[in-house]
Length: 317
Image (cartoon, rainbow, N blue to C red; front, top):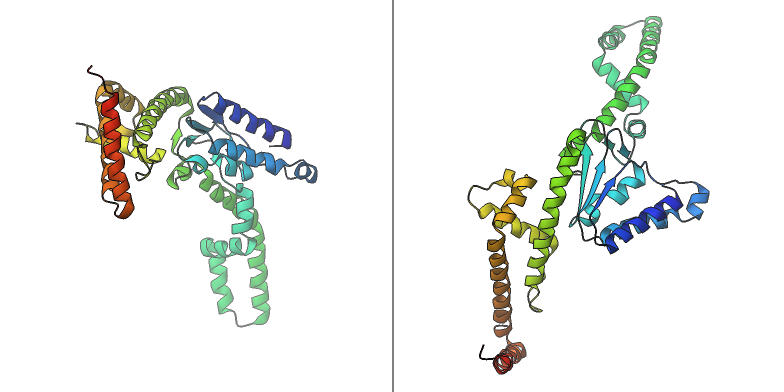
């Protein structure tokens, strides 16, 4: 990102949020430009605006790394799904995509310096292991110097190969399989199946977010009951799903199955939301009446007064 492009990205995300639209980001960035002119033009400020726009987002956001694309450096920081775990999910193309703060060459130069490569050579290379034994057995200084010269020559021959191996080893930590294993992406997706996958994923998320809003609104009944967080509402939906007959954790991850269940159980889910709202109201009343001190007296008087006013406003119908 340069200052202008970072500003345009942040503005676009804010516009999509204003329109209350879901968002899919096809990510292929290698960080932010760090030149003196770009720093003067506030590239970091515009990068932070991208983060602010994601934090404020309320619709589903999918960050997808396409084939042979990569996310590096500061770009990883502003696209990380933990910025807004309520809405954001990150995916990567299986096999060819890459992601990580440092590139493989940079990681290898930091973690696998020349001394570490030489130590690895002496641990793995048969010729060097034999030369090490021969060096230990040398009693004459001239013979020792000759063996050391052969060892240095062998090390210089192997060094370019081991440097390539170290880069490849570090690159393996940036693959989709490794990213999924450490939890920075939700799933790796085959490119040929990406359209179908995101179609069902988006439909499922839109339906889930709508039900989640109803649950959160149902919990807003008073000051004593904590308002549900979106992730907690999703866990409640998952609990209802798993309580259904024949449903398992694997079914919960199947978007088509989940969407079909929500359509079939729409009336039942409405009743569950009403029951949950009633439970929140009950808990609020109990907390008021058992709070002790003036809270109990004022709360009890308020409940009685509220019932009286409600009876006055009710009609015979």
